[in-house]
Amino acid sequence: MPRILTLEKRTALTGIGFVTPTVLIIALILVYPIVQSIILSFGQSSIDGYEPYRFVGLDHYIKLTGDGRFWNALGVTFTFTALSIPLELMLGIGLALLMNETFKFKGLARLAVLFPWALPTALNTLMWRWMYNSDYGLFNAVALQSGLVDKPINFLGDDVLAMASMVTVAVWKTSSFMALIILAGLQSIPRDLFEAGRMDGMNRWTEFTQITLPLLKGPILVALIIRSMDALRTFELPFNLTDGGPAAATESLSLYAYKVIFDFLDFNFGAAIVVVQFLVIFAMSLVYVFTLRNKD
Image 1 (cartoon, rainbow, N blue to C red):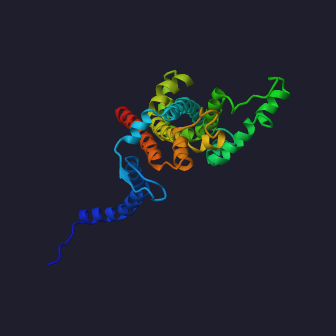
Image 2 (tube, helix red, strand yellow):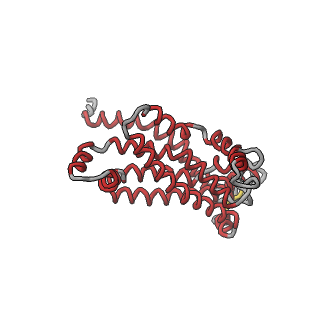
Image 3 (cartoon, rainbow, N blue to C red):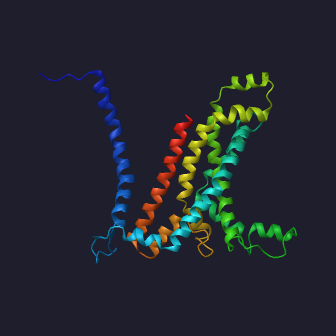
């Protein structure tokens, strides 16, 4: 006699059927490259197959501990993240508060705010690279013609200015992404709370600190998680803006791994760099997730 499935089991099997293709695609696209990188990082082989794969254990990771360029790239990555994320957050909150107000041409203002985020990173970076150029760039032309400086500023040729320039481009592009997430949180706050606050004599600043900001902790932490992971693996920005220069002052961990793999053709050592980067991002994500859980 055929076995009759209950409604709950049929529903569960239907759900599994819908989820399975997505899980397989994620495993193929995400999990497989991670596993492959880990395997490569523990071995030694050649791209042409002349040297077969052989297990070398932690040799590449031990080599990393003495690689000054790796530590420099790690420091550049952390510096870039520490400088850009707070600025993006503050500007994103301001833009979200502005877009949440009611005024004429509100839709056009929202479109203008989101325009930098919609631009491809490579195109965006090349545009800024032209404006930073010391010979014919927009910034130097304005500064020279207005008398602010006597000679062109080498924005991308100085260690400090190159990092500041890279942070500026990141803040200009991704603050709108922060604003979009925070705006969604703002629109979920009941308006009754603000009306009650005004009846109690709250001004706009008190409303923001006592009502708005505490209720935005969830969206803010979500935005921080996404942007921090993105900043820690930044590649297109330094690659197209400075190519890691001057003297590796803006060479991120992703860019260094790219050069090791594709310029030096050392796939095993490059894989070790990628694995370390993955662990750093994973650890920071855990910190954010546990913080978010505690806030909830």
